[in-house]
View 1 (cartoon, rainbow, N blue to C red):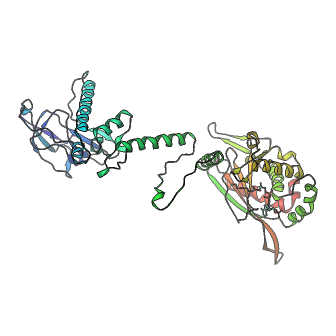
View 2 (tube, helix red, strand yellow):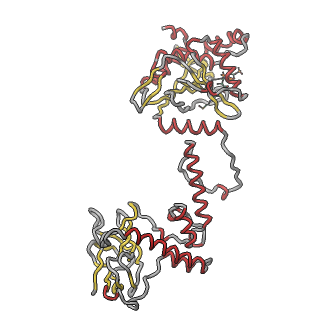
View 3 (cartoon, helix red, strand yellow):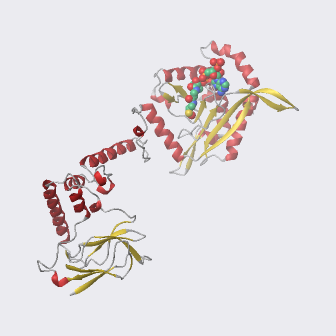
Length: 448
Ligand code: CAO
């Protein structure tokens, strides 16, 4: 008796699907649940199974056709099901076609294919046994996204088995063989890449950006990141991804301060260090952090709390041959500028000569990054978590400044403040930086 296979209901609001590939030919013998066609709707790709065992009597659609739900696609003659000569074997799956097309096919592979197909059949039969055989009316959804099925990936049975045994989804493997055929090496390379990504993810510095093959363009050299590079990469990407940054810029008139610094440096030099703009900024920043406690804080998003600190520890970014190191000066508010100059000098030297200890790099509430010794007009440093702000210092230079009706040459120091907008608002940022600029112009400000 002839039985019709129609396009079943697929999902709410889906009324049609496109025939991607017809997997049987007229006269083919099919079992119940054998896949007759690969379909695709705008929601998913799926396989259309036969509801009955029998022989394909009619194929009423073509590849590329848009078929309506309920439309007849195949006619199966179920009376011919039992007869041995009732029909030809079902059209070979695409993987079989590939096997024939591939140059390296051999009888061993064919045997393995037979065995693996048998294994698959056995295991699916085992799974089905306890239940009543379900009518295969509804399509089996492969995924929400249109995706190629494993049977469409060209690969030898041995390679398929390898992928299956080690849990690799062969559809994810890029084939390097003829017609993108997946080889054993491709599967191994895929696993190697996954393992490398996982270990990089464990270190917190991985990203999913796919690098191109740079060697296509010329000679390249790969070098392992050292520990400092990895720590910096992890800390900076963590800060950048989690902190909504705002950048505030200002300029301090340091004309008078520079005169003072040069005059008084000799007193500091007696203690073994120079009086530098960084040491002065350390002292002034400590007062600023006390004046604006939000900047001497950390944010605890898990508990929705802001943690205010009564101590003032400030990190200073030091440029070393090994990269950026940030030693921390503790209780900056309690130390004199001379003490701070000496301590900064010692810590920077320790950082550059690899003598810095781990605890000397921890516990900063705020950071100062002075690139002025190198140059540059402005830059935007990244906040160093769990602090909420960082001060960027660029190179001071003489500029004409309009004062009392005329341009006067003034030494101007460009400052930038990067801060965490979860805790600090724009007006707070502008006030903090302006306060610092005014304190540099007139240190008496700090007394109020
Ligand atoms: N504007 C103009 N000149 C500056 C300056 C500035 N902002 N900062 C420093 N200078 C001058 C100093 O006066 C000194 O000049 P002299 O040799 O004529 O006295 C010279 O530059 C070198 O200063 P220094 O770097 O030795 O001293 P410092 O205390 O100001 O800085 C330190 C110490 C550790 C901050 C600095 O050496 C350093 O490593 N800076 C790089 C920081 C960094 O890499 N930041 C980027 C991190 S990413 O956010």
